[in-house]
Length: 206
Image (cartoon, rainbow, N blue to C red):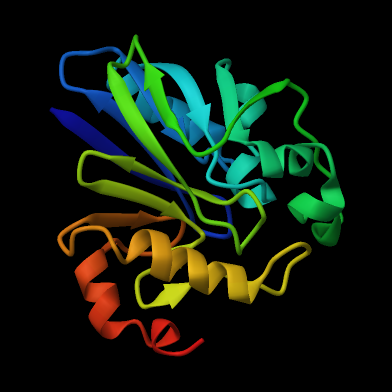
């Protein structure tokens, strides 16, 4: 049975997620944007060891705690340079330039398999918020990063963002999923594909 722990981190209210199978002490961490002490507290509470860190995209509020977790970092190949460029990961605009120190592993549209955690994760490349923005589909759970929110969509006024690409990604890659697919976004409350299809005003235009 898949267990999902949501941990809000940073002043931006980023949703960091810890995923593991019941009875397994290995886990996956998605988007550890900061407040690593809070993340480590949950890891300790459940006696978990991260097998990997998965990043939905390369902005500072999603990548800030990666170096401190001691596991491999995975990001889409088109966002890899964000990890080393403060102008792209937006930390330069906060006057606190940040670069990931550890090397990162890259992926494209694929399935990621993590043997220790016993999880298979489908990568859905959803460019728009950033060129390498991705969503991760695990069973009926879609971790949507900053692509799709409850009654909202990701911002496209950042470097290398594209409103046209974002809308196309959502309509052509996410809204085709079953309506009961659970959406766990990078910020805010969870939702479902069916709810957003009926109620998200941003998706009725463009």
